[in-house]
Image (cartoon, rainbow, N blue to C red; front, side, top):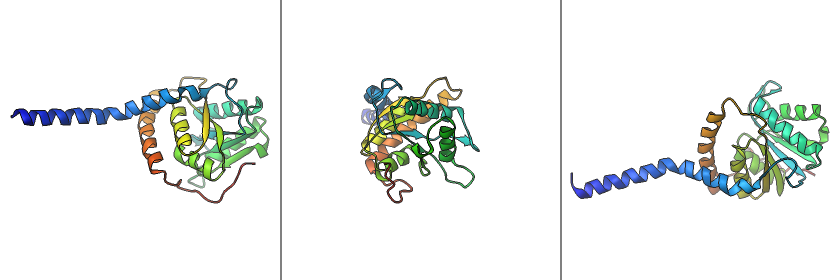
Length: 211
């Protein structure tokens, strides 16, 4: 094997190594950059709207991870930090409706029905951010989700035109924490591609400004 061929092989190996490592490096960069934009309920700035990201529901029942998000958003509402909750999730099928389940839960916890706005087309973080800006015409907001998801959510929304900060909803350690962390690494890498393409959300529709 010639020296030149060995150098080519080494270069390819190094290149492949950095390609494999790049999702982890990118996620570390996003987490570091947006660490200063993550707060708790007491220290976060006041905003008109808090955006709550959807997660799995079972009928009308919220899973633990989604209930924790809603409880954090409801705490912001009762503390006077926000006036409205925008609950955004998946409603791809007639028998599956995250936003309605989130909305009904908020109402049972004392949030006025007029103060809970449902976004039925928030199928992905990108869709939620895009629609918050283009459909609900928000310029700034507080984002509510778990800490592993917050940096990507803030990055995506900010790159799409919203001025956002986040509040983490992490009152417990989740059983699938390792799975969420691994998935988030790949999702954060995809988010870079999403904002570079800046394509419309899967569903946009007419403007519905949140007054």
